[in-house]
Picture (cartoon, rainbow, N blue to C red):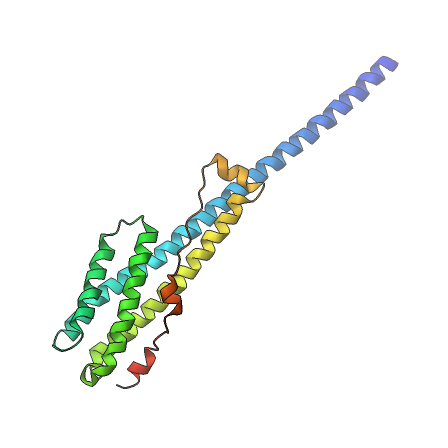
Amino acid sequence: MSSVGDKIILWRRDFMVAIIAIIIIVLLVIWYVASYNGLIRSRTNVQESWSQIDVQLKRRNDLIPNLVSTTKGYANFEQSTLKKVVALRNQLTAVPADDHQQTMEVSNQLSTTLRSLFALSENYPDLKANAQFSQLMEELTNTENKIAYSRQLYNSSVASLTVKIQSFPSNIVAKVHHFQAGEYLQVPEEEKTTPKVNFDDFGSDK
């Protein structure tokens, strides 16, 4: 009788061990899937953030030919600066789509040159009074602001993904599935220290 009782006790013990093991396995699977899905979401956020930057870069590139067309009638207007804008636009379109750092490096140069161009327009009252030029200046300014905002959003998304890739225990899942953190988009030091031009002041002189 005691033998039967011992068997029942052993069976119950083995049963509880099996139940506990199953619960642990289920919890591990749930954690693994949740960690993987979290990494996927973070990586998707990085990709979507870059897409927003790309949309604004293309928008700016589409506006530049109109800017050139509007200013070409002013023979004395800073042609060298205008040519630099066109050259940088062409250079930007030639950068490989997956080279984000090079894209933003050229984009930053183009932003700086456009600011210089608009600042120089102060010396040309007739050009400033041109309604089309004022509209283009406003649209380009808005686009520049959106590029800057999208860059901040991209860097925030990269930071979120990086934390998950480097933090335990999600770094285990990241390593298994070869997740890689993106690179932060840096703002050149000269752009940080260059005084910002308020383009709205130009538009108010219509």
